[in-house]
Amino acid sequence: MGRRRRVRALLTAALVGCVVVLPATGAHAEQPRPTADPGAPTPTAPRTAPPPQGSAPDGSTVGGERLGTRGQVVAAGAPPLPDGLAASGWLVADAGSGAVLAARDPHGRYYPASTLKTLTLLTLAHRLDPAAVVVGTAEEEQVEGSRVGLVTGGEYPVPLLLRALILQSGNDAATALTRAAGGTDAVVAAMTSTAESLGAYDTVVGHPSGLDVAGQSTSPYDLALFFRALVEDPLTAEVLTTPTAQIPEVPGRAPGFQIQNQNPLAGYPGTLGGKTGFTDAARHAFVTGAERDGRRLVVSVLDTENEPLRAADQARLLLDWGFTVPASAREVGRLVRPGDLAASTPAPAPSAAPTPDAAPAATAEDDDGAAPLLAGLAGGAVVIAGAALARRRWARRRTAAGSPSTRR
Image (cartoon, rainbow, N blue to C red; front, side, top):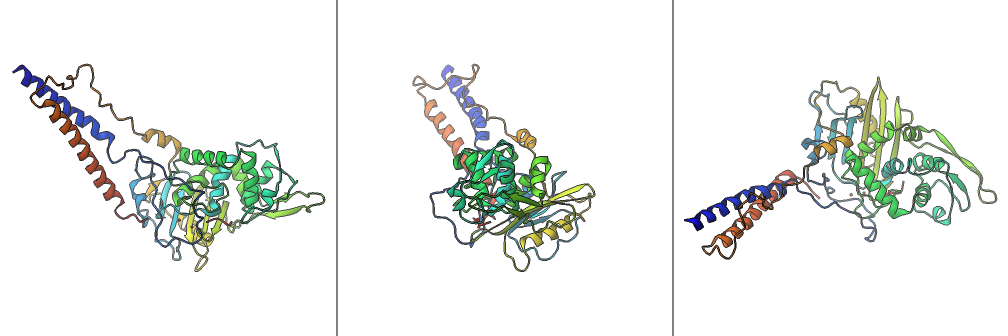
């Protein structure tokens, strides 16, 4: 009888252990983050299928489960959406409350093109010494894509380069800033850290300029997070709305000249700025914001063409619509804050190790089959947990399919 009691105790402990193990392998187990691959062939054409869908590291949908759709969601009680919204992914949200008013494929991971420069600005604006002057090199002169016109030997203050980065989407300005901040690897790592600190887990950084890199991505949701952070910071908010800047003369090499803000919605009432993007793979993209009667909206648009409406014109429609949405409308999700991320981080899974009061492990002395039975139970628990995880993930992602490049 003594041995049987010990076996029953061991079986009870094994079952308790199964209960402990299962939460650690639940539907929100930690997942590896996607990465860019600069060594892979550069994307040169638009996708022919929907892009991958992003999620938090634990597999959950950032901002609320309704934002996990690949289709369109609209706040209950809002007026009908405007016609002409042709972009594959877009989002409109209240920057103050964080309420997402409407979206299409909000967590689709699209190629960002130069809209990624919003994250570059956000990352570098407070990392670089504003009194520093960066001397131009041949690397800037020869950079691919859009350029402001930096030349070898030119002396460019950091605040001017930040404006050149945004006003004219200068890839040469991005390269000079990156060099001043420690190089591409260091800046990519810093941008990745900034994105993750905001909850922008759909964003995978391959290059600070947004030039196409295999695996690089952002989403309508993440762009809205970046732009909200930019307009809430006085330094970066001022950069976004600077109308012009003066590029200095380089004696014997180049005359001085003025650059203008290329935000196509610069004349929109209450504009907070905007950033365009285009590459052959990304197609056209835009992120913007505006304020009216104390209410701020942010809008992001990804993967669209200039016909029938430009990305900026679609964003204008969404801004106009967003300002008509009543406060009583029921949001479809929220733009998260860093504090929300800390509050929602799951506690570490309880350890399956036995406590001092737990029954001892089976040994060879328990010769009536307890040890093999315990091993079988543990293995079965793992199989059951794995099957449950697979079912949950399939149910959550069953409609998922599974991005576009930066010249501007």
